[in-house]
Image (cartoon, rainbow, N blue to C red):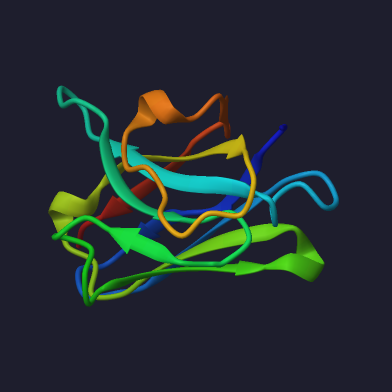
Amino acid sequence: LQLVQSGGGMVQPGGSLRLSCTGPQYTVTYSNIGWFRQAPGKEREAVSCITSGYTVTDSADFAKGRFTTSRDNDKNTVFLQMYGLKPEDSGVYYCAGVRTQAQRTCPMSPEAYDSWGQGTQVTVGS
């Protein structure tokens, strides 16, 4: 499962960004896809995930109410829409995937995924 990321960049506090994670045709729909981030000097942490098939999502507490994860099956793409960004949201964001049958829960642990995007930098600052 080859994942290609796009989006990211620099934004002022309170701003919005949308990250994209695109895979080969027909694969993203039947893959659990997770979003993770890593700030300098910190461990990689889970942001959100979306399940294979059923499109159920889960997110970390810090992301609830500010970040939305969605999937466009026609575009083979999963999106991470981020609102109300804060400086502490800065870091490299990665999407990760694992092909699986349709599921109603998705893992928030990086060890559960076997394919990773190239990462994209998000910088929140004035």
